[in-house]
Length: 371
Ligand code: GLA
Image 1: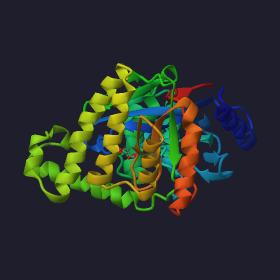
Image 2: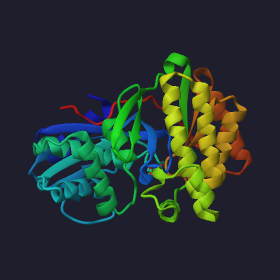
Image 3: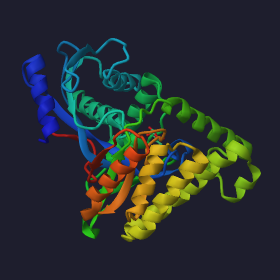
Image 4: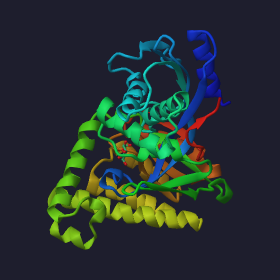
């Protein structure tokens, strides 16, 4: 068992007495490339990271949820705006889909940084879905569970996100990125052997509150839908570069990002297969520019990190996740990550930005039942 899984199990025993019937866990994610393409039925290339949320659960009991990280208990059957809405939402979505998920108690513990755009909420959902599927013997596959988690997020929590985060958390594989076709929902592992080529993925958490994230996210979605309508296509996935001539203003900028980003994802997956990290890195920078100029979801802090990475010899860098704050990533020669972190701290201080935080993650396994 991993540390987080042991913590969840111990928290269960302490809170509820007796042993849990199941322990499961699921990872957070970073997205290597393919931003805001999932809800346009396009392509994404995320990977699961070695930070997880674990859940220890059993049927019946006092119908309570306990978070070891917050040291708080919340009733299972109640509605409030706390961390408990994620496991509750998954139980709700399972029941809505006709599966049993009514009476259980659970303890959660994790180490995915929260509110940073690393999908800690998708990790809670994925771990809960897997544990409940096991507890109640529903026998659902991971793709079905991912869609149930997305429904929980969209309809219970009320965030209009795409499928990427839940897919990455449930279906990610160690040492790999996951190429997802968000229309057919086919997913394919693509080897991501960074160590073998002497590279590391450094993550800069700008610690900028993603305050406008929900409004900005919904605005972007709506603009994409309008652009698709103008073009007479089902989703921007179906638009081509030539189609862009028929758009103008905001619709043009948003659609141009989506159309070019989809193409970049496919080329990025190809370059990963060929271990061509130079091409991969160029695609990351191009993706960032497209998000900065056309999709307009970057911030001065995210831009400063990407520029500092470039100035320090990073083969590629870009913001990752929804944007409007949160994290950016860079590929860096493994020996030079601390140099980049230090240069970035200095740049942020010079610019009057708050102090960023840095992480290094490795591509890790998706959700698992471990005990
Ligand atoms: C958030 C959403 C995802 C995806 C990204 C942007 O992480 O949850 O579905 O849309 O933003 O790529």
